[in-house]
Length: 474
Ligand code: NAD
Image (tube, rainbow, N blue to C red):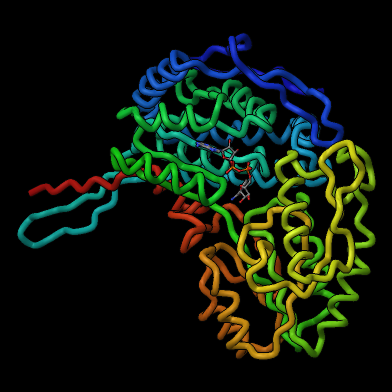
C-alpha cells in the first residue's frame, strides 16, 4: 500500500496545500498520490520549529539521543516489507533491492546510534604551566538536508542519522519523486521518541526551497546528494553566508580489467553492480577499460549475462531490473545513444526503450566510443555499459583520471604490483580492487575533484555536523 503524502512541520502533518504535484509509478506512469508543496510560510515555520528542536536536542543527554536512534533502527527492522513496497512503487527498483537498501539503512542507524553516546570532550593539551586545552564538540545547529531519488531511504538516513547523533536538528527535503519512503522514516522517528521539532520535512519546487532556506541565518549547514551542477549552485548559495557544505555528487567511474584478472568472477561482480538500480547509482562503474588480449572474451561474457537480465515490475518475483525512475533518465539514455551512434559507436545489445509504457530502457552494451562522445564525458546514470580497449597500464590510468569526476573506481587484477600502482595513481574518492564498492556504515566516503566535498559515512559524517570548540583553562 502506498503512503499518504504530506509535509511534517512543527510536529504536525500537513496534507492540504494550494500547490503540489502528482507522484508517479515509473513502472506504468500511474498516479500514486498527490504531494503538497510547502509555502514560504510553511518554510518559515519549519525554520522556527527547527530552532526550537535544536535547543531541545542539543541539551538532551547523548545516551538518550543514542536510544532514540537505536529505537528507530528497531522499528525500521519491523517494517522492511511494507516500506520496500512503498519504495519499489515510487522508485521502480526490484523489491529485493529495496529491502537491501533498508537493511543498509538499519546498519547506518545502529552505527550512528552507538556512536552518538561516544562523542565526548577530549583533552588535547595538559601543560606543565597549568594550561589545559579541551576540545568540546558542539552541534552546528539547524541543518538542511537535500536528497535525490535513486536511494530513497539510504540517502535520507545517511544524512539524518549522523546529524541527530551530533545533536543537530534537521530540515529535510527528500526528492519530490520518492516522498513516500521518507515520510515513513519521519513517522518511525516520531514513534521512536524524537522530540517533534527536531526533524521538519518539506517538499516543493527544489530551487525555491533551497533558495529560501539557504538565505536564512538560522540554517548553519547544507548536506546535498545529487548532480554536480546542482551541487555547484548550492555551494555558491551557501557561500553568501559561509554555511558549511557536504556535497555528495556524481561520478563517471572507470573499471579497469587487466589481462590477468579472474575473468568470470569479475564479469559476475561488474554485471550485478552496473545494472543494480538500473544503473542509477553515483558510484556505479560507467567506463569499462578492458585489456585488448581479453577484450573479446570479456565482451562475450558481458553479453551472455546481460541477456539474462529480466526487466519488469519490481513488485513481481524474478525481476532483476526495474524501470528508470523518471522520464528524464529515459530521454538522457536516448540522447547518449543517439550521440554515440552518430559518432560511429557499435551497439552490441539493447540501445532502445523497452515498451512504451513506463520508463524502461534496455540494458545496453556498446563499444567503439569516440573520446568526445557524451557517454565519455557526462555522467551516464543508467543501464549503459560502455566498453573500451587498452593495451598500456600507464595509458589507461591517464584515461581513468582524465575527467573532472573523482568518485569511485574499480580495478580487476591478480597482480599485487598492479594493485598497488592503481591504488596509488588513480585519482578518485575510492579504489575498489577485485570487488564492488562496499558501503558499510563505518566507512567514510567522499568524492574529490567535482564529485563532492566532505565525507558521508563513518565517524567523519557525525563530525561533519559538529564544531570543535576549544576551551583553554588555566
Ligand atoms: P537534478 O540534479 O535536477 O536532481 C537531483 C536531486 O536534487 C533531485 O532529487 C532534486 O529534488 C534535487 N534538486 C535539484 N535542484 C535542486 C535545487 N536547486 N535545490 C535543492 N535541491 C535540488 O537531476 P535529476 O534530473 O533528478 O537527475 C539527473 C542527474 O542527477 C544525473 O545525471 C546524476 O548525475 C545526478 N544524480 C546523482 C545522484 C547521486 O547519488 N550522486 C543521485 C541522483 C541524481
